Length: 184
Image 1: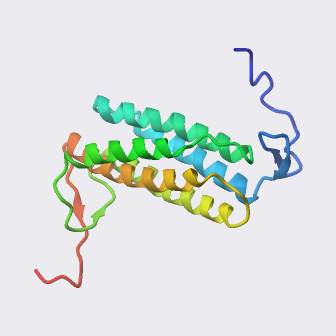
Image 2 (image 1 turned 90 degrees about the vertical axis):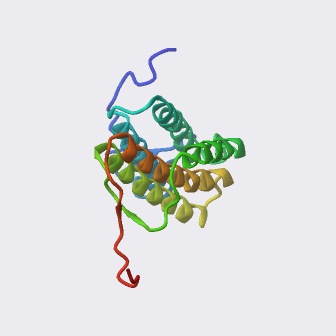
């Protein structure tokens, strides 16, 4: 493969616009760029989780997610292009079911934390929810593939389950939310 980025700065964005994958120029703060940027931020947050000592199944899962998020960002950057499909969502669901089967039932909300890796994963989960909101906003005004929004929704669920697994793997404790309306 040749050099894709032989020149890092082009000066073409100095006027507040950026190029989509199809060559169209758009404002850097338009809904599509907001969605793309938040997906990129999510990918970075997952990269941070991967800096921790993770068990192989968790590491492999997150690395596969990173690749799919890069594809998802590509789909968002080229209107009409489809890179995320129903089978990608199904793969997330199967992984989610497999990981969740390892955990005790959750009877109360948990607070973010549980260890360093788990806390970083909670941050990735929250960013994933924001990416989903950005995609929902975009979908109200522009056509996007239907699997993009579903993928991000399912991914946030998977990240939540991974938070719980990572907390256990690093010997942390899940802190349960103290429900003020619940009687002891």
